[in-house]
Image (cartoon, rainbow, N blue to C red; front, side, top):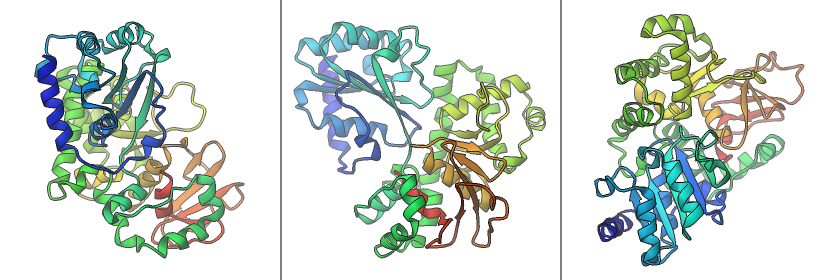
Length: 394
């Protein structure tokens, strides 16, 4: 079996041939013995694994997917043990959530074998409540799709600097001018909002939306079944929930009406919202300091990124697209909460109000550390910051 896995691994090495490294390459501590990369389908997890393995000799490295027919009936630990006997040093396992009780096998590998494991899986994976107590042994990184900066780098084959939120707040005019001296931002911004979140856009632009829909269907029909053991009869209810968000604004969400419309109880609805949020299909934004928000009504509920709106919704609210772009770009490194003063509270410190170029400050004029985030402007002034610039946070 090991030889068959090596043959397949060699083919995959040849197929995935990209030199572009995503933002999270700089975040991962590769000194850890067990590393997990989790995220939505299509954000580049498999590519990351293969890129990392190319740093090692072929004989010392191995890649396989946990749902492969080749590994059917064989435990992850058994594969790792045989691989280690033949001098293996680094094992990459894709789609690990497809393997039942993978935590136990990883714990055994950590305790008894002298090899490193790096794995990928659904963003819904959590190790905190693992019976194998894997959270003390493995480091988990949750990764996102392309930021606007990354999209531009791939689109234009350029290198662009990323900025912290504080740098953007304090120096946004200077930063925007520097970027605009190199790039006509609005030539690409709308393209990013509709097509730019998933890296496979550059390989398959004509079938992009079909692939996005397929990825979300796989999460709902497959991944969530494996992880949360959802009743298969309710799969259609999850899809209806996604579709419903095309028909309502985030702040008009009515849980009672939604429960009746879809035909499931409120408690089940809250649970499904929680699962879809974990799986990066939906994005819930809550008021700060709710004790346990998992199964309570979210203050605002969105599809997870702008591309999903353009894929599933016939008509889109401009305000919703602006808001989810803002949330999506910040949530990699910052905590975003719903605010009754402005639109969003970030890191319990900054208030942001999102709008078009005619938006004024009357809602936040007396609020400390408050800013307008404005669409359709290239350069801001003082506390008025262009929306697109938040796409350079990662």
